[in-house]
Each structure stands twice: as structure tokens, then as C-alpha cells.
Length: 217
Image (tube, one colour):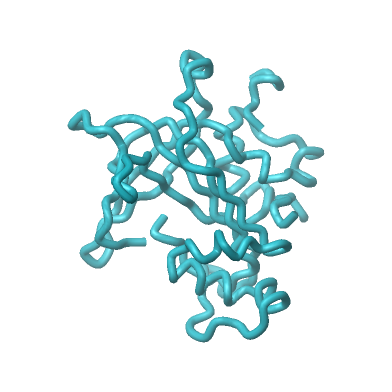
């Protein structure tokens, strides 16, 4: 399984999720493989994963957070990409610690199976930003589901999806956005199993997007 995290040492014209805090259920885990990333410390190769949530609630106008999918109203979704790391400064660790309501112990941080997130609920804080005339919706933070909602969770709607480069589901892969497919095809894990890498840029960019027993994962 390619979803073990550890402490080892965009914009389009489709409907956007409005800013706000909504109930979310993790329904999607996509292994992006090793990607070349750029930052203030230069370029580096990092294992990336994309986590997706289906969202429940209403916007400021009282309209439900749904979109029409083949004639059926479905919850809107949002995704965020992370480096698969539980280093104390890693974005994944910060978001998961906030979601859990407490940080990881040293022992937990040695090897956490990210696939445990699938089906787990939380509150997803969404913000919007503008760039080159386009509006982007971003996952700004995650928090535990309030106690009053733990026994009244919205029923799952989207089918859970897991794409693991160790054993890729090609039918699921065929449903991915073209840019997401291209990013995965650039990874050495894909090349090792499938052949030649996808031509084009090799930089990675995100896709457009306390008690122990009470911890959700």
C-alpha cells in the first residue's frame, strides 16, 4: 500500500465550492507518486497524495452544496494534495492533527496508514482566492466533527475511490481529469509499471484544489 505516511527524520470554469465551513466525508485517496516540486529551497522530489472530501451543507443563500452529475444531484467535492510525510512541519501532519483534535505521538508518526481516512468525517474550512482572473476554492483547514453531529452524519453519496500506484485501478484512472492523469504519468512509480513517462513539464502543481476513542482515525 502506498499510503503510509511517516516522520522519517486550480482554476476552471466549473462550479466552485463557496467559502465557508462544511461537513465533509473523505471519499477519495489518490496516489500521485513521486513528483518534482519547486519551493523556496529549490526543487525536490516528493511523494504526493491527493485527498478528496464530499461536502454537505448550504451556501450563504441557503442553496445546497450540490451539482448535477448526469441528471442526479450530487454533493460538491474538493481535493487537496499533500506530501506523504508526518514530519512535524509537514502540511499533512498539521491538517490531520487538527482533524483528529490532537497531534500524533512519536510512535504514531513512525507509520500512519492514510487509507484509514477513507469514510471519516470532519469539518472542512473552505476559502477562495483569485489568480489570473480565476477563482480557486482551497481547503484552508480541517477540524473534528462537533459532538452534536457525530450521531447525525449525512449519509455517504459518492462511491469511495482509492488509486494506489502499487496496484493501479485503470478503470478509475480513466475517470480522472486529463491534468491529473498527466501528473501521475510523470511519476517514476507509473513509469516502472506502465512504461514511458508522459511528455511535458515535470513540475508538480495541485489539482484544481480528546479521548483516544473519539479520534476519527
